[in-house]
Amino acid sequence: MQLSRIPKTVVVLSSLVLLVAVPWIASDYFVMMCIRVMYFGMLTLSLCFLASELGVVSLMQASFFGISGYFIAILQTRYQIPFPIPPLVGIGVAVLFAALTGLLVIRARGIYFLMLTLVLGQLIWALASQWASVTRGDSGITDIFAPVIFGISTEKSKGAFYLFELFFFGGVIYFLAALKRSPFGLMLRGVRDSESRMAMLGYPVSLLRYMAFIFAAFVASIGGVFFAYFTGLINPHAVSLTTNVETLLAGILGGIQTLFGAILGTVILKILDLVLSGITQRYLLIMGILFLITIMFAPKGAAGALKRLWD
Image (cartoon, rainbow, N blue to C red; front, side, top):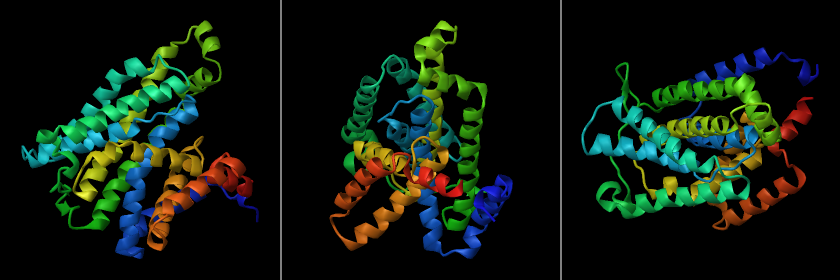
């Protein structure tokens, strides 16, 4: 039987059951790897959403990722504010920052959008590095503890943390998929294909770009919450250019035009990072070569290749 004849509902439900069962059928190491893929995957999803729907690449998504993590760390370690206030405040501040910076970036196009987001992202990195009295500089803030959910400590149980994160990871995917299928998503793609035509038809082009930017920041900030809780620390690396570039690399490897490609690219990147770093110290060179090969021979990424196989 051909793969394309298998109902997508069956595939989705089977995948969901398998994902929920992971803590019981897989090793602790595999569970922790899945946790890393999910929180970094949300960061990649935020970038790929903008790239696929608006045709722009943002190099400041890690800023929203790190802002939510920093506010969790500060509120929890310095002021001992209990869950769920720190993550709600962290996400709120990240979205507010996106709302303010979005007023600037939505006016830029093409390479200017890329450069402006790069500059804003570097400003956040400089703030995290140099405002040592608040962020503790390059050392970062440690002793961040994951919350207790329904009497179960997600700090002590990686399986519980995995299921807690899986719930929100699934919610993020559903949210972005619904946006892409909605009239809002159709209007965004219209702006991507011909902004002048959409403006002539009376659509609020600037508002559409602005809302998409905020939605993407919201998704990235949720990933930052789980990053801070899982690693137990937050430092300037979380908001650095390196993190933004890794996110872009994951999107291109998997296929930057689709949500599935963002997730697949994150899986590939994390596996390669783990395997190659254990084999050679020059693993970044090998990953760079793989990146070039992907651009030259598989411009739609691994997701595009799998789609051709499915069809």
